[in-house]
Length: 226
Image (tube, rainbow, N blue to C red; front, top):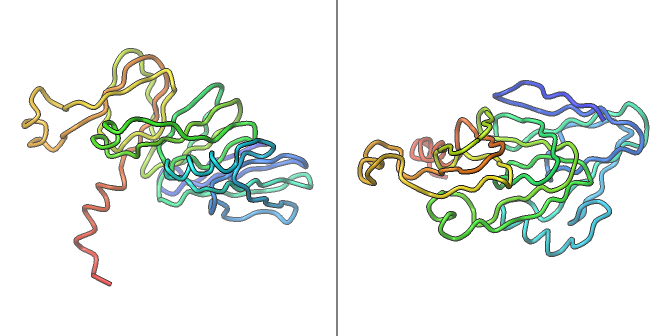
């Protein structure tokens, strides 16, 4: 399977070229277009995997869909185009281990990658603006992530601070805690930064340049009531 990411970073899509017998698992609704030699199968579990009901429910708590779509090429040189729901970036991650992904940022992955959910804790969820559950991608293969705005990556070796709502994904070798941006809590909020996520450890971190909650707060008052 070969891939290309087009129209980065404002309106990214993934173009996959697949040979007969190759399959990729995608977020429901991600397909833009496909060749006639492609078929799709919808289920609540990884193709060939187990535990569809419980893992599907856990993914819903993490902000993903209960179901997964499995696209399979039945002829050579088939094309599949995928796109995220929000305007923004798409990146490829060569997974070899476990990556923790914010809800709605998982787009597609190889069928041997397990898409599950992991608990981040009530306190982190309340103060970080994220969900209590995160998507946990484990295994080896191609993984595609999406964002709102552009994605940039950071190789953390020690500590790194990210504004809440801007996390896309991070290696499970990293941990984060919620803290204030400045020396004082009042100063942090008066400066517009408030609470931040302080990562510690060694591993890769993906962040997005914008976040949907802030964008919604800005345009919400300008929308006409229905």
